[in-house]
Length: 151
Image (cartoon, rainbow, N blue to C red; front, side, top):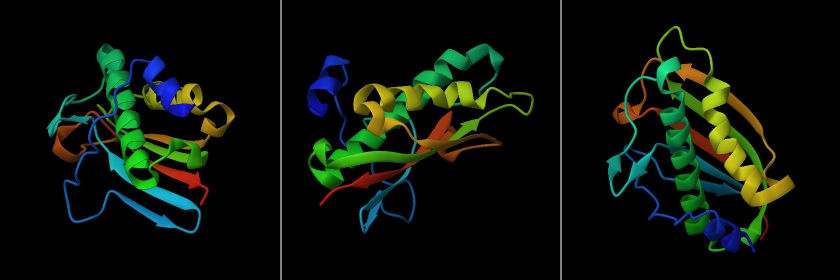
């Protein structure tokens, strides 16, 4: 059912990005799956880079959405089946923004809205959205996730 929703939205899940540092992409402990921060990577390249300001919010939202898609790819790799997702528990969203920028929630909403659309009530989550002076590989956004899964 979730796979059909993803396809109906025109989303083709990429190969899950590999870590850019000394960590693993996901850790499962008990029934929680911790997805490491995902940046807007596609085919090994960062697609959306640079500082976010009031002038490029729509581009930053595309970046956040791509981070969410990469989170989905990591969930699929770890669980093999989206039906095992009991709940998206929490997202932490970081925006590579200018010091004057204050609309971080508006940027990260693109990721949150995608999870709501795909998972319905299971996609409703707690969240933080904050600015950062820089992000890895100059990406516009980075988002990590905590996901509750069933056995």
